[in-house]
Each structure stands twice: as C-alpha cells, then as structure tokens.
Image (cartoon, rainbow, N blue to C red):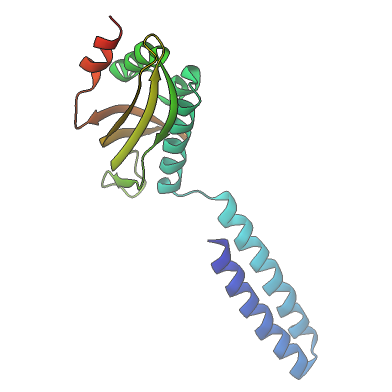
Length: 177
C-alpha cells in the first residue's frame, strides 16, 4: 500500500540526505531528488493501479451498495446482460422489498488459474440482507452462505451467477401472493 512505499521512500530520502550531508556533492543532491520523485511516483502508481482482487472487491461492494440503496438500474448495470436468471431475480424481487442493509462480511475471492484472471468466485459465510416486504410490511433478514460468480469483460467485472445455500426464491414468491 501507499504506507509501505512512503516508508521506503522516507528511508531512501534519509539515506540520500545523509550522503549529501557527508559529501555535499551535486550527485548526492541528485540522489535526494531521485528518491523524492521515486517515492511520489510509487505512491501515485499504487493509488492508480488496482489488482484483480481489488477490482472484484470494488465490484462486489458496488453491487451491495446498489442493493442497499434499492437502485435496480445500478444493480442491473453490474450484472452481465447474458446472466438471464440473475437479472430476472433482481427485476422481479427488488421491487417487492425495501432493503435496509446488505453486506457480505469477509469476502473470499478465488480466481481462475490464469495469470491475468478473467473469472472469479466471491464467497462468504456471512451474507446478510435485511429487508422490508413492501406489501405486508414484514421485516426479515436473510443470513446465509453465498457465492457470486463474476467475470471480466473488457476493463469491467460483471456478475454472471450466484448460489445461496438456501433457496429463498420460494419464500420470496410466497410473500408476493
């Protein structure tokens, strides 16, 4: 992270400053300047560059935020257009509920075996969605193990499927009657 690069940069700058204090040469002045620029460059690079794991985590958090905000267009934007079942579930079920809280606890991300992975599985044993059924006013919480499949298309990650350990669709559909 930036803290590591900052600490290493501070060490380099200190070493260059000691060399300048001992020698006072133009080369030691250049070494200080190079250490400063290198430190700034590494910190900026670290802030700009996102690993695949960070990208998947960001996409997952964006999905949870959109769910919690009851933002159906935002949710659909994060789901692959070819993920028919997942899109259908969102389109049918989200209008039935007002989401009060959506979270997944600690995420476990497993990538396909490639060096530059294009698919991953995001899983957690602590998925929680607390919702209010709009028609009946009932408030309930869904707390379960959940796996999400996600794939990279171009520069963006899209969700393609999910598997809860408990099939909640029947219970949700029963509330709609």
